Length: 288
Image (cartoon, rainbow, N blue to C red; front, side):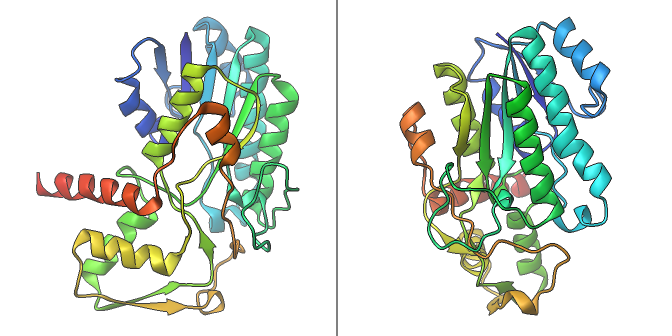
């Protein structure tokens, strides 16, 4: 099976690359914008055809949530239109598509974990374009699997975990929002789930994936500092309205993972266990 992985230099793309070494029964094509511009419809079609691609895992996205409010056209091109081009190219070859999406397709006003059957209602440009991308992918490729995730972090790129470690070492105090509740997702765990789906066979539909458990950004930061051995920075709780942002953030974005666990028989680690694994790797890297 020939697998195309887009956005290969991002957090999830890098983790897919690492785990590909454990899944050598497949042939991989790792691309980022330099190798394949997924916003170029003809280039996408030609690449998928020329390399006889059987499965596309689309890890590419415009994820700068606040900047998206001012860059709607670019955000829509990458999150919405490009997923349509990938889906069309996949369908033309009889290939499958795994489209990675987000908790931002919900407005976060709920108070029980979001299931795949709940009606999406995004209230940011990022969320609107990601939902449009989901719909485009499912409309144009009959073998589309959507995986929504949340609060993604890893040892790669820029993310909340790395930022909080840096700020914790630089500052004596730090204010972090405590009234937004969700679940962090270690990108390697998401990559493991994707490989489980690939090995067992793609089952089209919408799925939710994050780590188990729930926390606020404040709780998350306290755990990050504890695991990173940071004791000199005092972390204080902030209300959302004390930390103004251009794009609205979901107040509650816990995802229900029952469907993906049952369908593919996977066990999902608790967020603190995965955070400890990731920070352990980061500390090892910094000591080299």
